[in-house]
Length: 553
Image 1 (spheres, one colour):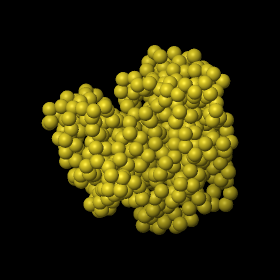
Image 2 (cartoon, helix red, strand yellow; image 1 turned 60 degrees about the horizontal axis):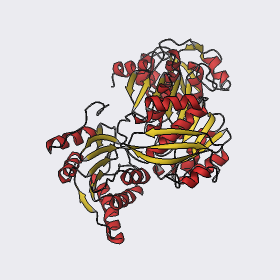
Image 3 (spheres, one colour; image 1 turned 180 degrees about the horizontal axis):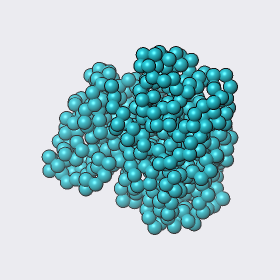
Image 4 (tube, helix red, strand yellow; image 1 turned 90 degrees about the vertical axis):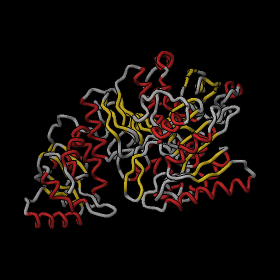
């Protein structure tokens, strides 16, 4: 039996301190769910949750069918914690009745609907007053795409902070409501938590909030009932095909964010065909952004910035410290000068997208330029995203865990006269087709590739490593590459080997896990933080490291 104490404590942190009670009958009628299966006389409610361990007094417990168990099996636990109503399907109603018969507890108000998952987001918005046109809630930015979501949301918040706005954040690494940080367990939380967080941010008077919106979130209704002021699209490359099956279905899941009921305005990077297709078909006002080929130092792009139809383009890219400076040019001639201090040319895309999304929210260009010049917001550290641990050798931890992200990362870190030594693996129980592809990418862009474990989950770790290594070795043989391919495990030993092989001129890149601090192996969570391991290995081998501040944020 799980203890509710810690779970309830966390649940309370993610909710406003006061919620005006709302009649459940009224809330259901407001989202079109009055009718058969819905009693007319239902109690007042003050919250809603999908997790019986997170129930607070006055809650609706949404008992949904799961992959292995039905949430209604935990009805008694939810009632003990103070749930006043159960929202479920017909199968759940039968299970709830069985649970009550066994425990002898009172029957709760029971609401039976054909698709409770489809109802829970809208109902959460009605209960917390954050659904649809969210009125006094913060200006809301949503970012989707395969790669770059986390960094773009951090850049958005840094730029908004530079503009004097108070901000919130909902994403992979953490949830923030002002200065308070809470670790995340999902890229996008479940819909009741999303709406309670928006209500909490409104209660605290925050001006704006940025949210990562994953394809899983869109597929499973985690942002149902939320309407973003500005939605941004980064890119679409192979990932999550274990869920979506095909790239077409993956694209369709992402494109759902840009429907009028989900966002008011859109900013879309059109460097790949998926972005161009999305920009041509969305039903909301859209700004298109071209970052890619032809932008770096291309004066013709400067003179003919509207040639490909993009509203904004990146031109005049120049090195600036570890990062880059560049210019954004509107097709009407307006210019903004930006700097991104983070390594990696792909961070130009993330910074440019954040800047145009803030413009799309109504900020004046002159005010934006002043904030950029005064505060250098795109040099903010993003935990586990191109995070620099040491400079000689350049030692970097990044979250790149799919072929495109890995290629972008490895292609951006080579230094003149130095080698690239990369450490990565592939995640278990995920898209198997990308394992060999990632191995080949690593072999093409590394001088030394050390194949190791990521999170094997319940899969055979040796089989996963073998698939990655075979992809690398095939590329070496067929393309006559000079990369040395090694297999070293466990992961901390692989990081140690990489540092042992490095000279001060080299670059060591540890990819795939980023900010994560636990490695899951056969159902057991093993403490493992790539940043801590890399820092320790550098120290043991006599190399200097950067300040520990933020290393294990």
